[in-house]
Image 1: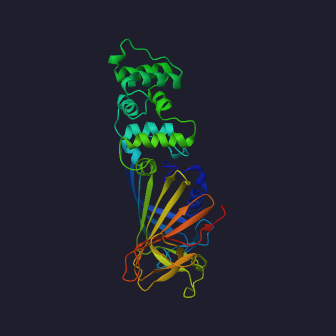
Image 2: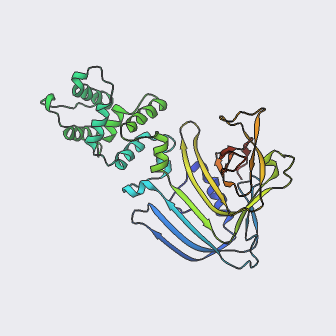
Image 3: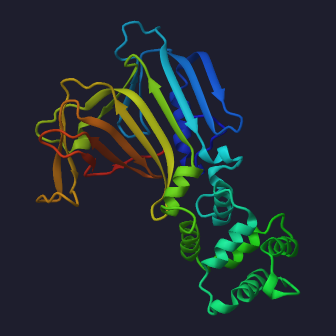
Length: 354
C-alpha cells in the first residue's frame, strides 16, 4: 500500500496492521513503473520473510501464513502489485478524505473534469434540468436563483442574449472564486440537508451518464490495489467458528492465495468500507459447507440456509471491513448441484482494533 494513495482516516487501523505485518519481511529486486499522472502503478519484487511465521488478520482469528508450503525458507517469493486511481488520469489530484464522507462540492468539481465539461456546459446542464416555475423565463429565473443563493447581483443588458460564458465569468468574479463552480453548486446542487444535496447531485449526474452516484465515485474517484503471489507462498485459514460449527466441518477452511484485491468503497447508506477479495490457488480435494444468509431468490426454512463449496468451485472470499465489524461473502462458481453466486456468512465478524 503506497503512501501516495491514502485510505480513509477511519481505516488507519488497517494501514497500521499492514505495516506491522510486513515488519518481518525483507524486500529485494524491486522494479516499478508509475505513469506520468500517478494514476497507475506497477511493482514487481521479491519478498523474503525473516522466518516462517503466521500473522493474524485484524485481530479476527483469521490466520495468514508466509512460506508455509516452501521447503527452502530463504527462497524469495515473487510478488506483482498494481494500483490505480482513475481520477488521476484526468489530471486530478486529491485524497479520499477530500470527498468523504460528504464533500459534495469536491465531487461536483471532479465530475466536471472527468466528464470533460466546461463551466458553461455545467451551468447549461443545471439550468436545463432545474424545475423552474415558468418555462418561458428560464434565464431570468436562473439568474434570480444564482443571485439569491450566492448573495450576488448578476447584471446583463439584454436578458434575451445572455451568454453562458459571460454568466460564468460574472459568477466567479462576484463570489470571489477562481471559477464559477462554487456559485453554480450553491444555486443548483446544495440543499438544506445532506440527503437533499445527495439527491440533487445524483440527478445532475444522471443527466450526464448512467449509473448511480455511488457507482460513479467507486469507478472513477477511488483507488484500487491488486497483489499477486507466486509459488503458493501465502495461505489463509478461516477458523471453524466462522462456519457455525457445522457437523461435517471439524477444522479451519485453509487454502493458498493466488491474488488479493482491495479498495475503499463508498456506500451512501452504510458509509465507507474496505472491500478485500482473496482468490485461491487451485483447490484440489477441498470442499466445505457454511451457514449463509437466506437468499432472496431461493426459499429455505429457518433463519439461514446451508451453502456448499464443492471441489474447485470457490471463486473468492470477500471481506467488507467496516469500522467495528466485517461481513464475509463467499463467491461460488457454478456446479451441478449448487447455484453460482455470492453468499454472505450468517454471522458478522466482530473485531477489536489494537
